[in-house]
Length: 97
Image (cartoon, rainbow, N blue to C red; front, side, top):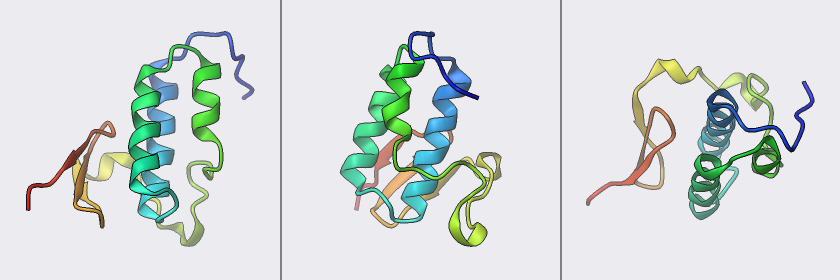
């Protein structure tokens, strides 16, 4: 489906981008700084045009190499390799060590 850039973004559209970002992070694609920056911009997005550049360079859901991308409903949160807990909904919280 083609998104019109001037149409207000829906929560489902934001969550789709969060899922793609999380999958990319699981694959080691973005650096953690880029992940956190994009994640913040996702939740600030007002229009579909705001979300479009945040999808750039990310595989579509269900097309992750090696089939490693699971569904978001599988776990409420998980620990990633950078010492950050990523909770359902995409919130990232630095772990205290």
